[in-house]
Length: 268
Image 1: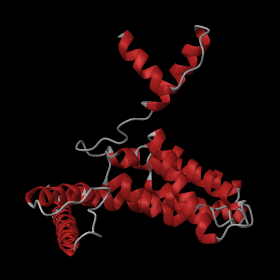
Image 2: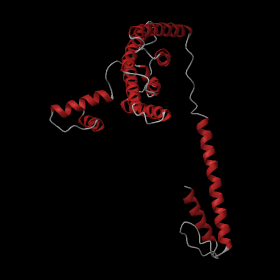
Image 3: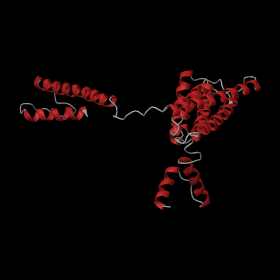
Image 4: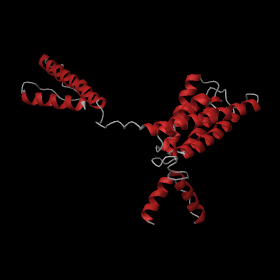
């Protein structure tokens, strides 16, 4: 953009001044006359000074936000439900984790800080997709699996393992439609190499406990529904249908996006 503006302004100045005989090859022929050099410098300065103003203006507009109002505060009744639900969930998981740890001589336990984020989603953002059971189970399983896989690369520095594991997990969850913020934390924790598959199993079992308690507590009031969905939907259902379509009709297996287009063109 700066180069095009510079080129256009320079050519206009050359056309207005018959005494300037320069050819444009990225800039005027500044070796002929000092006036051409002055003209070139003036044009370049105007272009360069124009860009920061545009960037600052764009930055201000983005910082001001989209004029969207923040969500309203919850009522006292809903807040009490949240308090009771979080207390019941964390109490149950803590006792479960302590029992597993005692039975296995501390070889397996639940990673409790992650459940602080989980219950915030389940009771604070009940209807949000990251709070649903599918995202919880699949997201955390992806986070722990990828974190453990990256931890095997002992030659990498810890900061690089943590950064790489978190980046891969977020990318995979985005593609699969299973975004779950605590999974990114689990990926960083497991990339350190201090956890085993025993911790994975314990963590998933504790997730099931959290889901059951959240489903019971949130549905005590008619103003809530948790979960909003249970089963395999969206990308996963299309993936299964795509695979079945390739086997049943003896056709070549295609990717999910191509299958969706064929299904839309074919109709119900």
